[in-house]
Every structure is written in structure tokens, then in C-alpha cells.
Length: 111
Image (cartoon, rainbow, N blue to C red; front, side):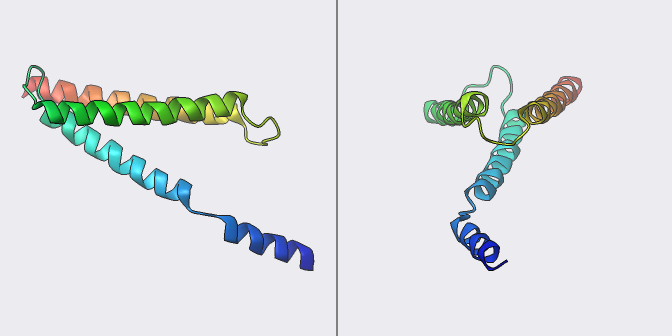
């Protein structure tokens, strides 16, 4: 019993909150991305530095996504996480974002 409490305390000390912070940042990123998408009309002229920042952000996020996707598929084989369930979750989020963007696009075209 004592050993499990010691192990539990050690695990709590090693928890660095990186995942929580990353999820918070990703939420903000998604929120700002949708707002920017609404602000930028097709055919608008953007200043070079703004387009560059958007491209860089997309590249960085893409790099992290592809790394994590690779790790999920080929990483530690001993993990007890159900990867199929995670992929279903990824697909549902992708579908939700796609639907929201399509709705916003239709609203923008109508008025």
C-alpha cells in the first residue's frame, strides 16, 4: 500500500501539464482560424507578412499532427490506448469543422 502511494506521488510530480496547455492553445488556434476565415473574403489581397504567418502556422500545426499520427501508428507498441477510437474521434472533429466551415461559407454567399 505504501509503495503505490509513493509511485502515485512520483507520477503526480512528473505530470507537466503540457497536454493541457497544448489543448488550450489548439482551441484558441481553432477559434482564431474560424474568425480569420470569416474575415478573409475570396479574392482579398493580404499583406505579405499576414499570408506568411498563416502559412507558417499551418505548416507548424501540420508537422505536429503528422508526427503524432505517425507515433500513434508506429510508436510504442506497449501502449494500451485504443487507436481506432482516437481515429474515430479525429474524423468526427474533422467532420464537425468541415460542416461549420461549409455553413459559414453558405451564409457568407447568401448575405
